[in-house]
Length: 319
Image 1 (cartoon, helix red, strand yellow):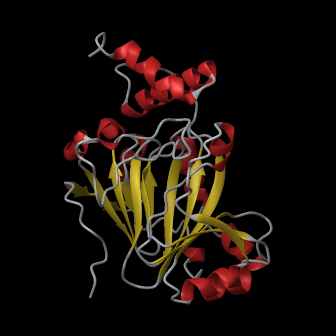
Image 2 (cartoon, rainbow, N blue to C red):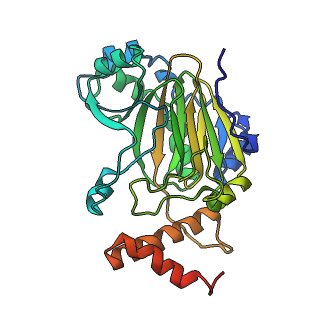
């Protein structure tokens, strides 16, 4: 039998599995540190969301599906391709719109392609999905939002993936409660302080917030600090909820065993900072670097000038 997940030779510790009532779990969330919560009942009402149930109940709307010959699905921003006239950019996966039953047929077809449905849940879904959604443990989720001073909930993303699918290492600028519904997933997580080991694309690039390093075949001459990378591993089973702090790097993998995976996440904006405490934390420094890049890109009006200006600013003066 094939292994469920590939080993990359990266030193990792296991993310602890805890009860949501454990004070240590609350402390980890407060300190923006990942934790697997085993008994939140946050998504219990959705544990029946297998393909058959979703085909019958999700609705007749079109859903966004990415299709690829490979199992790696690297996010890209189509708007940045147009904004910066990046005519040579080749999307790593094809984006299509499908009905849920069309997607289910292709996922089960064994046609050699990999599929990944990514769709925000909205009021166009069927009434049974709405009922299940309303039965989520919103009391617990709202408690986390309140006591950790998060901003508003921005979306709930439904994710359905072929077995073995990989979303390569990236970070998000929102707090994430990730609920696993069907099948098993693995997260590889890396703290914001590992920034220099993961070499993100420039902020103007369609792969903004994504690592340039291919974990399967890392180019250690181009990305030498990748050798220093270490992190955490989280294995999620149905009913588990993983807290992924904003700006934490994460690679997400569907098990190579089984048939497909279904997940749903809860994205919250960051809340206001009442008082800045020094020294700054890793995620705050990442935000500063992003803002510097954004400012230069906007001021120069030419993405090709950003790199040379930064090198002129830094090399020989701060090196």
